Length: 131
Image (cartoon, rainbow, N blue to C red; front, side, top):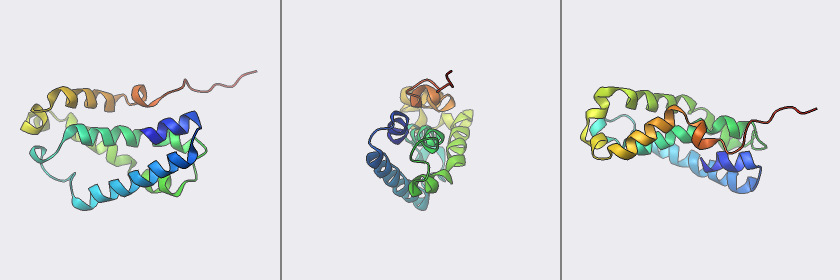
């Protein structure tokens, strides 16, 4: 999310690039550990949905001066993972797990945000051509 915001503001490209590298490394660890393959009881929805929201920010980064960043290219291959996470937690039976219910308030906020991530990600109105 932070890299997306920096890219939209077009400030601190080196920091945004470092955030992309860190995100790529972290996501690789999550995938290699199989943290997204367990049952609902073993998963934390708010963390996963935060990941999905962050992945939804990749198009804004791709439309910025960071478009050619190698870490962005690496992260883009996970774009569908965000959709899969949201789909998983949209299933009512997955939201019956104690791991969901114990954090229900933040989980519901994160699920709602992941369904309309632009509200959390977009800092600036879309740029329109001017005369």
